[in-house]
Figure 1: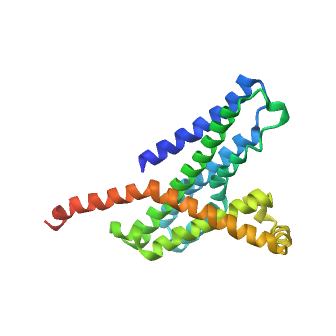
Figure 2: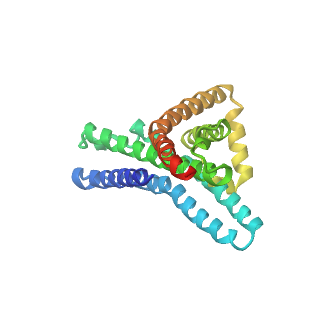
Length: 241
């Protein structure tokens, strides 16, 4: 998992450098929303760290309190997580304007690809940490728990929620913190989905992006899980002895 952390950190840093260098090298306006989106993409992992630390501390004092802390941290994390995968939608090159002709297209292509991949890496890292936590602490210490149907179904549900969150962010311009105003949030969502075409568009978007994220998750996290299986098999004779 260490290499996942390192790789995600490098991608985040590289994307941020490209955003800043774009303004400095080509003397165009700094596109601050991209930098803000990188910060929001990193936020879920910080929530996991702080939430995990708070859970560990309260678990020593009161079990019920620790569960409440864990539940709150999980809810906040899930609300913020789409901010990580949302960076994929930067691939539409919407930041380019008629005044940005001096910026070569090849530069903006590598810039948005770096942003998108940093978002994907952040998403995979977040989900895998929770996957590991749930599988190892709340279910079993056997590596096979990673691929149990119930555990995989939970991961799949997270991917679907990510796709939905990305849709709400991109097309309804809703943010994670808009849930602080539940009435206005609900009205905006209901008004949008009163149009049948929007319902089908949301379903298509959610499923398409969920499948994409799931495939990338298998591609990146799969070898890590396979390594755990291999390690467990190698250690089995010593445990029996």
